[in-house]
Amino acid sequence: MQLISGGKISEEQYIALDMSNNGERPTTITNVGFVYYRNRIKKLFKRPSKSMVLIPITTNPLPYVLKPGERWQGRAIQTPELEQFAYKGYLMACAYCSHKKR
Image 1 (cartoon, one colour):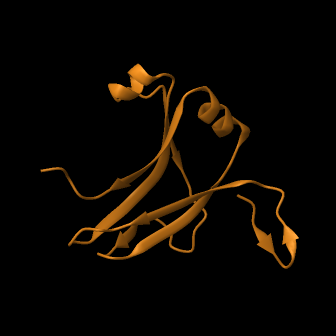
Image 2 (spheres, rainbow, N blue to C red):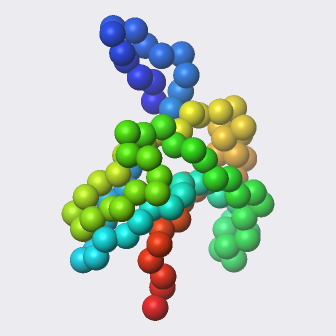
C-alpha cells in the first residue's frame, strides 16, 4: 500500500493494520508484531522462526484500550526483509492484548 498526500504518492510501501473488538468487554492492545514461520510444520506447532515487535504508525498510540465495537488502525513500513519472509514462508501479523484465555 502507498499513501497519497497532497497529490503526491509516497515512495515507501506500507502494511495496513486493522483490529476490531467483537467481544463484550474492553481489551488493551499492548503491542503489535509479526511472526515468521519458515515452513508449514513450524506454523502447525506454533514454533516461529522469528518474532518481531513493531512500533506502528498510528494516531492511537499503544497501549490502547479497545472498547467493544471499536476499531484500531495503524500501519507498518513494508521492508524488503518482511517481503522476503512473506515470499519464503508464512508471515503473520499479531496483536498482543491484555486479556487472558480462560
